Image (cartoon, rainbow, N blue to C red; front, side, top):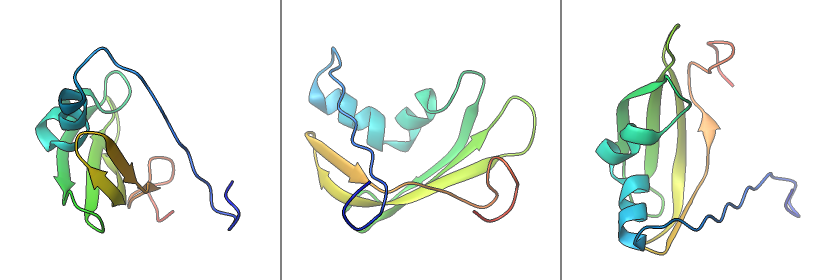
Length: 100
């Protein structure tokens, strides 16, 4: 938890790939849709405005049940070294189908 009471998750992962390839997998809608989510899920749609202040929205479809969404805002974009963004469940949420 941060000093202002908000939650923050910082993930660092070393992958055996060039930074540009990893950045592309995280930011290009077609590439992100190939791997995002748990096994068995598909990603029918990714909307992304890749710039600080820009928004993204990802539709996830489980093997059974209705689609749900997650969304956020890009805070920092510095290809290929840094990508910082917020995260929130969109409407409908994965657990209730209602607003978070």
